[in-house]
Each structure stands twice: as structure tokens, then as C-alpha cells.
Length: 212
Length: 212
DNA sequence: CTAATTACCTACCGATCGGTCGGTTAACCG
DNA sequence: CGGTTAACCGACCGATCGGTAGGTAATTAG
Image 1: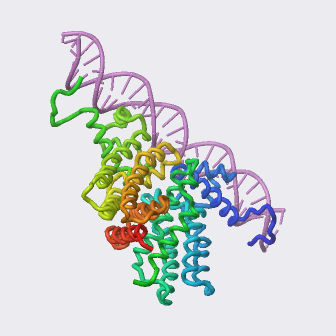
Image 2: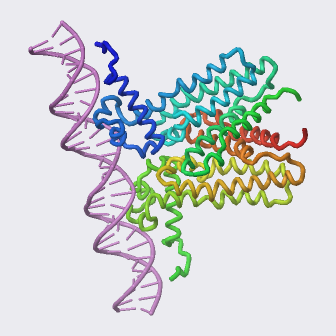
Image 3: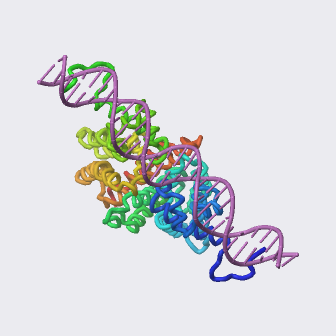
């Protein structure tokens, strides 16, 4: 019933699924959802289209799998920071913002935001899943840090939506812009991620600075 | 060579073009670029597909026309504010931010940003046009206000990219989120535009506050 | 009047789309 | 060994895609 040993040339279903997801994610990021056909995906996976449909029930299913795949790892970085008792509130916030820049701009999940926007009209359940399983946990983790700081008196209380607006807004837009203008040759001088992140963090800490 | 009178049932080429652009913009915003076929557009315009190709050379051409159409009017609001000598620097900034929220979230051009991201891989010239003819003028107008304030001593000097990052980021993300989660029934309580705008403006003025 | 042009039409094209059907191959099981 | 099943494939489907060839009614020009 189960494979008794791990041969190097694995053919297990789970393995194929993962390989397909990985390859397809790259294609979607490169060409968009509508711009990537099932035939193209199959070819890139060294498979037939029919085999693809053996593993996934359709293009939407495959897309959801690609999006969902990175949720856990991307969120894990945040929860680790929240749980780290050796850090001060400010250190936690700095680390969290850095992690958000990292996941949103570098990791496939974050970079997929524009794609999710693209398909959200046709498949509203994708947008819903993205929101409840990715956006909302991110907000909760960040808010945990803020509330802890407020409880300790090192942060001034702020409005939740306001803070999220200023915290996530620049990051998401930066990611979107970099995807949108990916063909620009001076991308990194026009959108210098690290410098923008540092200044952005200062602004957020300014919002939370107690006194007056 | 020219129509001598303006009959109510106009059949001029320019008129048809404008009507097509208007109708098509709505369809693109509703269904996305790939999700809107030329046949659908033709039907919505009470035309045949062939007639569409009489006015536009192709789907890309039509899309560019839709995007470009609102550039001038959207930018005009900003330039009027910049040129208004009766306003203080702070008043100008407040008015400019309000105008940016208005155009980015309400007007078709602004709402088209996710669409431009969608097609930017296939048609890089669209992204380029969007950048040089829309984004860049917006940045220049906003920067003009900041520089005026700095020259008058009412604003503290700030880094340009940093300021743009915090200024445009939340607005674009808000627009994107509202398009993405348009099906949510509690959209306005989750993304309360006016409240977020006010708080955002305060943050920006905080960045520019002189002293210390 | 005729000729030309404008704005639109019907009918069609090849290509490609997402998806399916009926196998085939190879490993595993009793 | 035969039987079952998991993993995969070649060939094909109807639908739809963006785009086009060629014609036509109405207006305008000379």
C-alpha cells in the first residue's frame, strides 16, 4: 500500500504534485494566469496535459494549490518573531516588518498578489482564501506585537485599520510595482527595497512613539 | 470633409471611438483583460467585432486607449492644486492626497492599475506608458508641493523615494484591495476610505513636520 | 448625376483554449 | 503467477479566441 523505500527516482503522487506546483508557480509568476496554458504547464513539467488532470481537477485547482503552498512557511517567519520572548517590542516590530518585506517581495506567495487580483473576479473563492488564510493571519501577528508593546507602555495605542493601512500599503505597492515594471533596467535604483524598508519602519515606529 | 452640423444621432468616428472606450473600460474593470473578449465588447457596444477593428487595430490598442483616456483629467486635478497660490503648503498637500485617493480609488484610470499589472508582462509598452504618462507626473506634482513647503520652511526636507513610498503605497494597496475583495459585503467597514485617508494624511504631515 | 468615402455588416479563418476518453505501462499484492 | 491499481500518455473534443476578407447602405464630393 505504501512505498517501502525512498528510491532516488521517486514517482509518488505527492512528489509529482509538489514538482508540478513548483514549476507552475514559476510559470504563473512569469506569464500570469490567463497567459499560462495547461499545455504549457504540462510541457514544463515533462508531462502530458492529461497527466496534469490526474493530479489536479482543473486550472483553478492548480492555481489555488500554487497560492496555498507557501502560506504556512511565509506565516511561520512571523509567528516565530511574535513568540520570541527575548526581543523587545520595537525589535519585534522591526523584525516583523523585515519579514513582511521579505515574504511579500521575494517569496512566491507574496509576489502572487497581483495574480490573485487578476483571477479574483472569475474565482472569488481564491480571493477569499487568500484573505482568510494569509492576509488576516499576517495582520493578527503584527497586531499582536503592537498590542504587546502598548500593554508594556513602550508603544502608544493606535487605530488598527490606520496602522495596517500604513504598514501593509507601501509593502504591497512596492511588490506590485516591481512586478509591473519588472522590465525596467533601473528597477533597484528606482525601488530600492532595503532603503525603503528602513525608512518605512521608522515611520511606523513614529506612529507608535509614546508621549504627547 | 467635415460634418457641417451636429445632429443628435451622431455617427462620427470620434464619437464611436469614445463610446467604445467608455463601454470597454467598464467591461475591463469588471472582468479583467483576458476575461473580456472582443466579441463581448462588440456586443456591449451594439456592434460587430469587425466594426471594432475598424476603430481599433486590436485588443491591445483598445486597452491602451481605455487606459490613456483618463490620464489628462485625473492629472488635471493635481496640477490645479499645485498651481493654486491661495493655498498653504499643508493645505495643498491635504488637497493633493484627497485628489489622489479620489482618482486612484474612484476613477477608471486608477482602478485600472491591477489590469495594467495583469497585461504588463504581455505588453510591456502599456506599463511603460502608464509609468511615464501617469505615475511620473503624479509624483512630480506631489513633489512640487513638498519642495515648495520646504523652500518656505514649513516642511522639513525628506527623501524623495521614501516619501513617495509612504504616500502612494497605502493608496494603491487600498485600491487594489477593494478591487480584489470587491465581493465582500463589508467592504466599506473593512476598508473605510475616508477614515484611512485622514489618518494617512496625518502621517505624511508628520514626516514633513519641521523641528527637532 | 456619378464616384468615392465612411461606417458598418455577415461570414468566416486558423489557432488555441480547458478538458476528456480510452488506453498503456509498471509496480505491487495475494 | 494473475489481478489490481497507481501514474501516466496519445489523440481528440467542442468552444472560443483574436483577427480578417469582402460586401453594403448611406453620406458626401465634384
